[in-house]
Image (cartoon, rainbow, N blue to C red; front, top):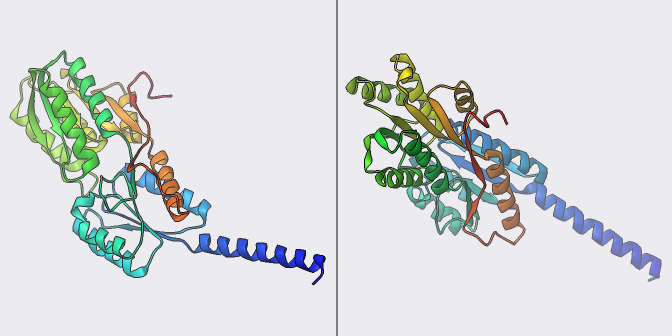
Length: 309
């Protein structure tokens, strides 16, 4: 065998190896499963994940159970049967453990995308809900001078949102002259605005006096927008009721820029969450999964002063 032949053979082997690696990357199948695709935030980070996955050459199947958390279990079991290469979830892991167990038993890695902590997950990519809730609740407490009645919109069924309510409770509880008038869990099947408006209308009717409601703290923007609609429809926008949300989605930014009751929201980097989740999947498929069980993506407070930035 001549040196030239050996060189050509070695080069061919390298090309074959590279082609096989590329074929493996192209063949990677990833299932993204969520019951919350009606939420703007979920839409944004799913879109970002898909964009990053396209660069990786993955075949991504986004599965929306449309508010049905129990249905996620069956979809996870389907993913295990179909032998996908990775699963990404946006749901409370504690509520779908049977499905997660099936995926793990099949040897398929699971990454959380704004999900919750679970031993079934390689990691969970999310925003720091503790910090976001502390910032918005403190904003409310400071704006109303540490006293008055506050309406809270929460959603304890989803861990990333549940922790926000816990922290807000602590902040308000640290102000003895602040009273939580009501702690509302809206129906989120259509996104949450309509039911939040209806529930806020009932609260306004039950407390008709000016000054009887000082603020509305919402764990995400949809309830805040619903509360804003209710306050404006009742003709009570001039009472100085302060509204805050979390997410800083486009509708919330418009409301904040308008200078009305909706004064502040926390901007999550939804695209950053989607991209970071894709990076976590890529690292895991490459045999080097993230070391941390939680990856936090930075956030910032949005008010009228910086909403146009």
